[in-house]
Length: 141
Image (cartoon, rainbow, N blue to C red; front, top):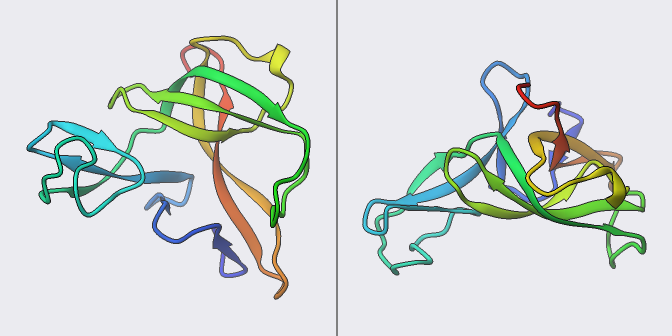
């Protein structure tokens, strides 16, 4: 992100230290031994308040998908856009997410995906609004 952009919602992702991408901000609870997204004050699995803020992995596999063809209220981006569920490879955590591919026939179960940032649009003050999405990748990328 640049000085002329902002995240769609604070606390969901951070830019990488080298400026080449983004990382989702999740939670890890030693009590449950599980990750969750977005990060919460207490573990959604056990209720424990020992949640640690962690940066989640960027590689995923596709589990479910569709295309959104009508803009939701307040949505700044273009339609159609892809929408689905991915499972992060390292954490084995499923996340509901925006997809960069809007054609359902171009996607497949267990397809390799990569976290990317996308500009949704420009807000009323002229600032770009940035969100995360998952993009299809070639196997091994």
